[in-house]
Structure formats: structure tokens, C-alpha cells
Amino acid sequence: MGFALTVLIAAPLVAGLSSLVVRTRRAMEWLQCAHAAVLLAMMSVVVMNVAEESVITVGILLRADALSAFMDLMLAFVGATGLLYALGYMGEEVTRGHVLHRHYKRFFCLFNLYLFAMLSAANVDNIALMWIAIEGSTLSAALLIGFEKTKAALEAGWKYIILSFVGIALALFGTVLVYYASEHVLGVSMEALSWKELYRIAPDLNPIALKLAFVFVLIGYGTKAGVAPMHTWLSEAHGEAPTPVSAMLSGLMLNLALYAVLRFKSIVDRTVGMDFTGPILLVLGLLSVTIAAIYLLVQRDYKRLFAYSSIEHVGIALVGFGIGGPLGVFGGLFHMLNHALAKSTVFYAAGMVMLRRGHKTIERVTGLVRQMPLVGGSMMLATLALAGMPPFGLFVSEVLITTEAYGQRPWVAYVFLCLLAVAFATLLYQVSRMAMGEPMEKDIPVTDRTNRFTTSALVANLAAMGYAGTHMPGFLRDLFIPMTRFFGVIVELP
Image (cartoon, rainbow, N blue to C red; front, side, top):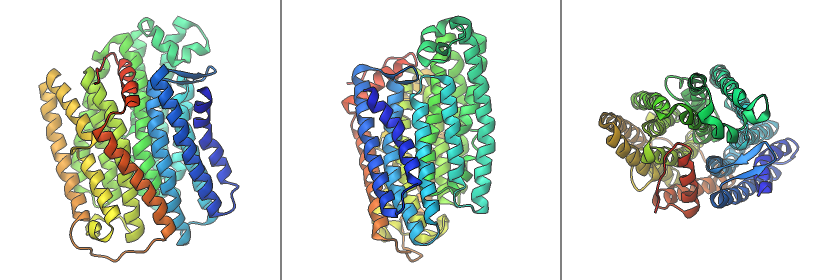
């Protein structure tokens, strides 16, 4: 099964480099469709085998455990639908003359390298190499954010680079402190950087060094995750990036940064106990939800609206991990998965609105359900999911987190529910204005080619989003049980 893991990680690199040499748009479409199929096939093999055997290793550097396979599931599925969507979206930009063919090729090269960096970070068994891979994803994302080369896009790209580099530097310092602590136990060796070995020796590590390391790691990777108050880059980057990139940033990059924080949290908890990391995550989670709920009400740009929704949902997941307990941890992990599906779906719909209306102003968009039934319906369904309505998975995760919070700290549950109610009302108010009513503007037509690719991505995401909210397949259950054990709790699933 090591072959499947290797191919899963290498496929985006090969596809990215190949994108530079394809000569026609049709050849690019075949290449990216084949790449998406390989991602889904190899991800299925990896996830199924990890669910059955717990761990897949390749040499001394690659290791996929339950938490890695969970990330692979999100990265490969949303990455595959993102590739299909990007073929339609960027292809339409080429048709309209907004993007030259050489820039079209460069976009897919960067997009695939971005996926390669994220998959590498999720599966490497080395804390230093994970940092390097996440840094690589930062560089790719920055170039993608500024891809359109407008003044606003370039400013957003530079702001993302500056804040991310500051954050990643702090994360590096936290990584060095973890190595300092492990080196005193294992000696100067590669094993001192291995996640597997760090889990084994965690009780013997220096608690002061680990506490300090976690603070730096949380601030560093928390910046990339859009955790308040380090969230200021997020709305501009999501608003100005090409929409396929916005979907990947919200659906995947934020979850990858959370994954890095959770990896370190699971080690620190073994060393100093959960009473240290829990309150910090809880406070930052509530702060993130608070800030997002306020800013959702005043947004006039629908892409920025969904960007602030991402800050809210990162905060909800942090509340789950901060409150701890079986339901809190399970709820946080389940929230990450469902947010990736719902947020990429809503950005796919938003991108189609932008192509067919030509702007991002909320007040000027009405009647989407009547004028564009699939797009308007998809946006409304994804918004209902993001607002935490049943039968979607985000409703389940929010109920579980609230239940655990009420059992441990009732005041947290009350505050959490109040914040969720504000975010629920503001998000639904904004999007319902766009979806309902009479259309105010005429549609800008898009090609059948664009419709085929974007519709395929939307339908696949909607199907996965609905299925995840109503079913818990056996392989996912077999991933969640060992995943929760990383955080010192045991979840019993039927």
C-alpha cells in the first residue's frame, strides 16, 4: 500500500510540471481529469487500508496514520473537484480573453504544486519536513492569490506572504523547541523529528519547552488557519484570489494548518496534560466565532462574506478541541470534514455567480434561484449547511460540541450558542437576499464547456455533503476511533 501513498503524493507534482508543456486547452482538460481520477483512486486505497491496518509507511519519511488519512480524504476529494471546477472557471476566462494560454498553463502548474505541498505535509513523518511542505504551500498560494495581477490581488498576495511568513517563522521556532526537547531524550538523530517517536517519548519530554513550543506553533500555524486575531489576511486573500483558489484556501489550507496544530497538541497533551492546551484553544475559538459573526453582518462582497464564515468555522472546530472530551474531539474533527465540503461548494457557486454577473457585490445580486437554479440552489444548500441546519454534518458537529461544552462548562455552551445564533442569522440574511426575489441584472452567458466542468464539481460536492450529514460509512468510523485516541479520548460509534 506504500505504492498508493507515494502515487497520491507524487501525482500533483507530475501533473503540475506536465501542465507547463501541454499545448492545447483540450490536452490540459484530459491531463487534469486524469489527475483527478488518480487522486480519488489512490486516496480510496490509502484510506481503506489505514482504516483496516492503522498505518502505512514508505521508507523513513512517509507515514499515513488515521489523522493523515483523514486529511488525505479531504485533500484528494476537494482537490479533485477543485481541478474540475478550475477547468471550467479558468477555461471561461481564457474564452473571454481575460487569461492568456500561457497563464492558463501556469495556473494549473501552481494549483497542482499547491496540492502536492499540502499532501506532502499531511503524510510526512517529520516535523521539520512538514514545516517545509507547509511553507511550500504558502509560496504556491501567494502566487495563486495574486494571479490576476490587479492592484487589489497583488496587495492581498503580499499581505498573505508577509503575515504567513511571520507566522511560519514562529512555527519554526516552536518546531525547534520540540526538537530541543526530544534531542535530550533520543539524541541527535532523525528519530528526534519523527512524529511516531515523539508520541512514544512524549511523557519524558521537557514540559516547559513543550508549553513554550505549543504557544509558538499555535500562533504560527494559527495565522495560516485564520484564527483570530491572526486572521486579517484571510478576507482579502479569499476575496481577490481566483475562485477555485478561494475554495482550496477555505476548504483545505485552513484545515491543513489546524492539522499541524493538532499534531503538536497531541504531543503536548501527553507531556503536560490537556489542561494547558484546552483553555487556549477554547478562548481563541470563541474569539474567532465572535469576530466572524460581527463581520458577517457588514459584508458587501459575497466572496469576503464566505471568507469570514471560514473564520467562524475554524473557531467552532477549535472550541471542540478546546473543550475536549469524546464528543468535543469527535465534533471538532467531523466539523473539519464537513466544512471542507460545504465551503468549497459555496465558493464554487459564488464563482459561477461572478462569471455570470461580472461582480462581487451582494446588493446587486438577486433572484439566483430563478435565474440560475443549480447555482442558486447549490449556494442556498451550502449556506444552510454552513449555518448549521439539519440534516447536514455541520449541524451534527455543532450539537456534539455544544453537548460536551454543557457537560463540562455550561457557560461556554451558552456563549457558544449565542454566537452561533448571531452567525446563523447574519449569514442566512445575506445569502437569502441573493438567492430569492426577482433578478435585477441580465446573465452573462458561459460556454457549455464551462457548464459541464463546473456542474460536475458542484454535483459531486453536493452529493458528498448530503451523504456526510446523514451517514457514517464504516471506513470513516474506523478512522475516527483511532483519531480520537491521539487526543486521549475514546469515542464509541455504533
